[in-house]
Image (cartoon, rainbow, N blue to C red; front, side, top):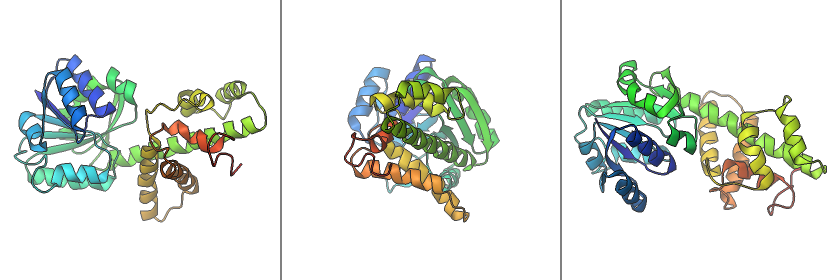
Length: 298
């Protein structure tokens, strides 16, 4: 089986490395960052495709890991070169966090071209991609899911079939919405603790043993305290993903004030040039004396 990748940033590249380790044949990679594609291709011994249609031609299964709705639409329906050129019989596994409706659109376009698509939304980060321990939520036809499942098992610790196209993307939007709210809440708790003169290591320990505990306390708490914001999940992506959830809520007439306030914080990070920091960098906005606006709203 020949496998291609479109989008080889840190997640896509590490997924490709993992499958190579598991003896899958990686035939082609593509990225708008040509240097990233060329470097990974040299490492994996495959082609660095210059066109999207080259990836399709060289592969039976194509993973896509792109940034947003616009990028997803472009790779599947861009004028001239796109992934659906001569795509009959191909399987596209789409791993980006994008709007549910875009997954539905892409599935329809792929069917017209005689191809299949599956959304495989990832609730994990870079180390899990490399180690084959992703948490994958899948949406599409169950028959397509069963076809893709053996490959997905090599990439994941959990593979969950959620339902038809778009359904997994809804779940992923909610996962990231709640994660982002928890991250912002943790930053504010630590900010107030610091302003009160409390020892933050002690405070984090108390949080971990009480109702203030959360997964983000484990992943981000120490980083917030130590100002270590090496990027695993960027503030810019947090803003984008919270926006997806808010759009879903808005379409249903549902008000989500916590999600809205959290997105505003991540939007601030982007506006102030902090969007490339890890989501833990939201602490830079809340802990006093860290950033030009830190502590403003305490």
